[in-house]
Image (cartoon, rainbow, N blue to C red; front, side, top):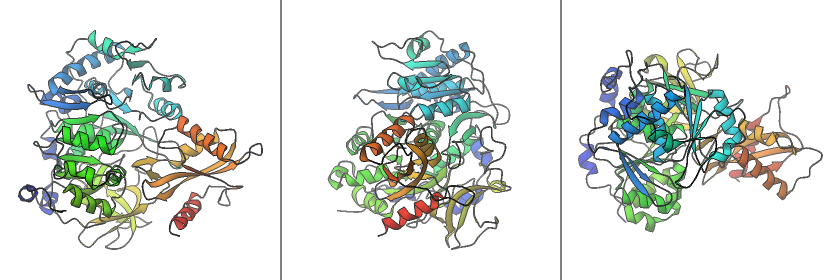
Length: 560
């Protein structure tokens, strides 16, 4: 089979700006000038992502339901619907800066809630739909959310959340939820006009939570100035063009989905695609075919599933995709080769964190050499450095920790964790990512490994502390340590080492019980797929758990 790229790829490449020149000439002010509002005097995210693009007939959302239904919404329709939602928020006493949480799948109601929250000057907080009650409880309490918007399928998870704020539920035609606000009934009773609340650059419009390693997940209040960075990534790394049909398959319950499935494309006035159903090979190729997708974004885990589906399935859309972006974990070389051969498209690796957005990319929209195994070059607007333990910058081929030079990164926006006095971000001139990398001769940077205990499984970042905490709530568990075990399909799988109470005996039945317990308390992707029982866990003389010893054992076993 031919490995050639689509016929227009060579022609399009001639119009792509040179990376080095574009990076040198980059001006954050020129990006800010493209906004209708002003970061210093007043700006509103709903205006930037919706109102200013509300010309007649301009599509903002293509939606495909899990039951086969489909619909499209224009920017003009969403402007009116967001106005109704904002009026509802105001009627409930929700003020600018208050948090509104969304426990919703990828449906039109999700986008209406996001835009309406922004319109009211409030802060949208996603709650991933696979979360259990414990994960929801912590995040809602920590953010002090004033309202939760959910649907009938996820509503039961809120029954176990103490001091739960008021709930607004999306119900079907013949469904009711006693005591809740009904989403569509409330919207229909509100007027469409609502003057957008103007905010400033450092005011938050998104609230997310990271995965914690040594403590609970930390809140990240994303300020409006971050829209500049989201625009740069969408335009120059993913290379979303006006003629593209774009689909980011990441869930908006997480940073990559909310930043770059929703905010970045809508900021450009570009239509986005929501598929409500679960990811499968069949559904992915069907959506690509039906909506004529040309620009795709997602995680290596999803792409490896496409590879497992075989070349015959891929043949149905071969040559359709112009650009494919990958984030969430390092991109395997075999994925790059397979996509070139069987889908006739270029897939590029990108790196970022919830706290920074994407910062290190092989850019589709800027011309530079792409080397196999390299995570790419600094995104325009960021200067990256490789540091030693004393925060000295290292040279070519010297492994160190990846850091953002905050002094020379004009679109850098992270200022610290929510309600934390001190944190990793407050570290002099650099934001320290904690991930180990090395600089290459051409200035690109290669990823070596994570410098912390975060587990990356199927594109999800999982904090071991949360899983350990859930296990310790079970009466059988005295101690627990959780690590990532190398896995060819998922990158890592979650493995737990457990010390049992004297009243319990190790058994396959107990393993299954503990797995289901964690799955219910946390999330389907967070439960330990393997559990090993030990008599004691490795610790320092002061009693600090040494996860790295267990992790290194698993790495060694995987190489045998």
